[in-house]
Image 1 (spheres, rainbow over the protein chains, first blue to last red):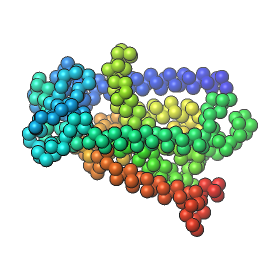
Image 2 (spheres, chains in turn red, brown):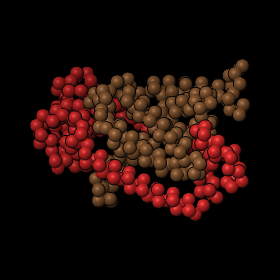
Image 3 (spheres, helix red, strand yellow):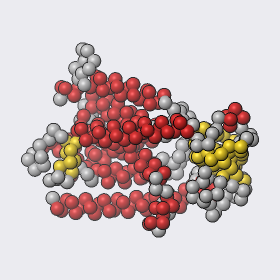
Image 4 (tube, rainbow over the protein chains, first blue to last red):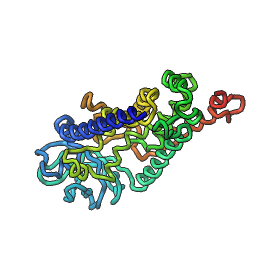
Length: 180
Length: 170
C-alpha cells in the first residue's frame, strides 16, 4: 500500500509538471500557430500587433459611446476600444456595460483599437445565469459520483459504494476494468 | 462553450445509453459526468489570472490548456490516480471521454472569429470552421439536454410504466 502511494505521488508530480510545461508551451507558441490574435494581452500588451493584424477577442464591456465600445483589459489596465462603425447599428445598440462580447476585426497598430467586422453579444444577465447553472452542473457531477463511489481510507482510493472494503475481495475490480 | 450543466447532462445521457447496451457499468456513468467538467477547469483563469500564476512559477502560463486535448489527458491522469490500481485505466478513459464530449459540444458554439479553438493541441494547432449552432449563454441547449436526461433517468429508474428500470434489475 505504501509503495502504491509513493508511486502515485511520483506520478502525480510528473503529471503536474507536464501540465505546467504544456501550459507554458501553449502560451509561448499560440501566437505563432494561430491565424489571428486571440488574447487581449497580444493586442494591448508590451508586444503590440503590426498593422492589419486580425484579432478575435472575448471582452467584457466597460462602456459604450455610440459606435465605440470600450472593453476592460485586466492585464495592462489600458482600455481597448472596439470600433463598431461597420456593424449593424441595431446590434451595437444591444451592447451594455457588463456584457461580454466576441469581437473579430483588424487591429489598428499601436492604437489599442479593433475595427470590428463581426460581433456576438452575450448579455450580462444571461452570463450570470450561465454561471449559476454551471455551478449546479459541477454539483450534480460531484453528487452523482459520490452517490456511487466512496473514499476508502485503507486503499487511499475511491471504490464503488456497493463494494466491500478493500482487501476483502479483489474480484470486483477486475470485472469493473473489463466492462469500463 | 455551453453551460456546464448541459455538458454534465449530455454525459449522463451518453453514459446511460452505453450502460443500457451493456458497454458500461452504471457506476461508471458518474465518472463520465465528472470528465465532462474537466475542460471547464480553464475557467479558474477568471479567479486566478495567468499573470499571477506566471509570477508564482516564473514561467509563461495559459489556463486554456485545460480546455485542450493535452491538458485533459494530463488532468484525467491525475483523476485516475484517485482510483485503485485495477480501475485506473478505465477511469482515465472515462474521464477523457467525458471531456472529449465537452469539446465536441463546444465546437458548435457561435464564434465571431469563425473558427473553433485548437482543441486537439498538442497533436495539432488545427482550427476547424465553427458550425455556429448556439451561443454559450443560450438556454435551449440546456432545455434539450435536461429533457433527454430526464427521459434517460425515468427509463433507468423504472418510472415509466411498462418499462423495467435498468438500475433495479442490477
